[in-house]
Image (cartoon, rainbow, N blue to C red; front, side, top):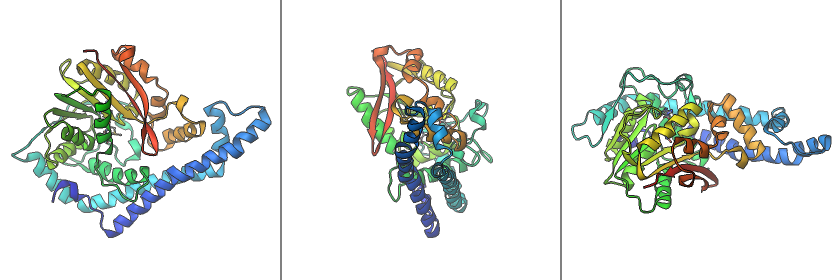
Length: 373
Ligand SMILES: C[S@@+](CC[C@H](N)C(=O)[O-])C[C@H]1O[C@@H](n2cnc3c(N)ncnc32)[C@H](O)[C@@H]1O
């Protein structure tokens, strides 16, 4: 069976997945909207009556919201639905693991490989990332029981399906569907219409679903993906081979790469920047600038939560996610002025891209730069 078709929840598993997806959609959607209403219609007016002004900071809004039973119910449901998501995905993975391992091994060892896999057993995963379970994924992104174990990647894939459905408010999403990868392609063509990339790199590519969309959009280009996680890039390589595209995957730190200067015409990332520490983010952007060819495009898409563009209620819920739900770098990223980071990396002010773009029912933060030719 093709790797893309292996992750098929059995009937009872599928109904649990659908329940968790629906619960998440409700909690992240309508329930969160009720927090806005509570704040605007009750908490903020009560504060104003007492102080003669509206709450002015995240701290003041947090003081009002976090003690309220509705907020506490929202928080409990966010936390429990996250647990349920990992349980539901884990149940399916436990059942299909032997077939996944067999198929991934065949694809990785195949004779007619289109791309490549370069692991670095000496790579030390930098702190604080090494010890964090991002999204509270059990075992985190890096855990591996032997070199062939891709459970971390399967959890990513399965949970991505449940989470994708919840985020887009649809009943089901195909795990590994490169929605953001296709968005990257569209954005790149819009921002740099004449760019025909010869070499492309994705930073923090994870299981590589989005990298596949890049390779499909520019079939003549040499496409590379890098990530710190060995199980994730191993799976990414098998996934690309299974999709019949040639992609070169590397276990590598985006903040300490070894590609030559000016090597890539297009460097991209998808929700990589908010999942890494401030220091690594700055060094990764500097590396990206170094690796970018003259006339090349650096294009990152990420969460749209800069405080100047985000309501106080959303800032408070985000702060809660940082403290409790496996998003330790989220607020640090939101509070970072990316334009400044990109200029420190080497871009001139007029080369920097820094904008919000519509993304379904919400928006996404798009930033990077076009290096002068
Ligand atoms: C939230 S995941 C996103 C993965 C993928 N871009 C996607 O959208 O599915 C963030 C990824 O960044 C990787 N990462 C974090 N810090 C990194 C670094 N310094 N160098 C390379 N990868 C890194 C993690 O291992 C993880 O796979």
